[in-house]
Image (tube, rainbow, N blue to C red; front, side, top):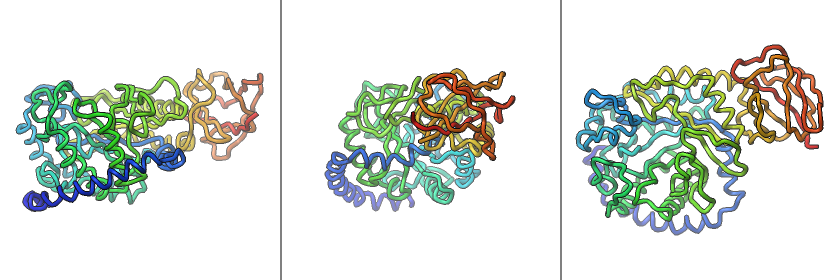
Length: 461
């Protein structure tokens, strides 16, 4: 839609949104209060089974690619506006240069699917306020402010439906561009001590209408993944109200705990069940132990950058990423692994290569990740363990040189052991050493140098 057409319809749009929001929010509060454990479990079922998703940080910050006025800016890619103290008018010029002609939604979704990822979370709007879709309430979007003029989220929505991948959106509560949100704070956009007296107007007239667009025009969505909740103008009561509002738009949607004020810093876990949100969000870290009955998802970069920085070559190895995936699943969590596409619309080769390698492992061993629950055996010197009813999956990082894998703290009767990579499911010899320990005899070499999976068919003693 053109900017001129948007301005003609905006007044009517706001009136309709205001009336709809008032009615919807009233019913949403009631429905949330009545939500049962069974209803929440049903909403969370696909997400708990998925275990592995792709995070995509992409926007006009990919144009400077971490550099401003010839200098490398240490802040992560999506934060360059704040890190380099760039004025709004100057930052807007990056939109004029954003023309990702090599972007192909189908290709992106295929990369994620081939890696074994079940869902994609992309930045609909990051802190800089730029929108990757055609918004009725803003001209600061991909259709009006860039030469590209293609609805990126619309194309991704079609591709995700085609390939059976859940589409999810990251949406920033904080907005460095909107005059009713953060604009007066320049040059410190992230100043948590300052307040904007018009922030509630931003929420009602801008943020909520945009969320309504995203849910209704590109859904059904899997997750709305909020961020930027740490600002002074956002409160827990506002978070709960927004949680209710989004549920009213799509009752089965999942919402992270950054919708409110409950998360404990980068640890990401909620302070208590009284806070809004369906799952915790550890950032760049993995909890030390499993968390019984707690839904959580580690989000992590492949290098050091959220978004794209041309000079960040500090890539995690495939081995590291694969073992992190097993570690997270063994603790009952999900792994949301980030890619930062270039301004041309390409996922960097280093990311693609690592995702392809992970995908090859998942083709053989995905059963040991999808739909599993946390390790019931305690700490294991040789690797990790995931579980399903009647099955334990032993993720062996360090293959034993003597061919003997000791499995401690086992409170089950082991009926059969075999290598997951073995299509014939040939039995491995099992020796019961004590009431709580068995030894599995393994071949000299494991089927995978990074993570070989041994399956135990078990029964409760």
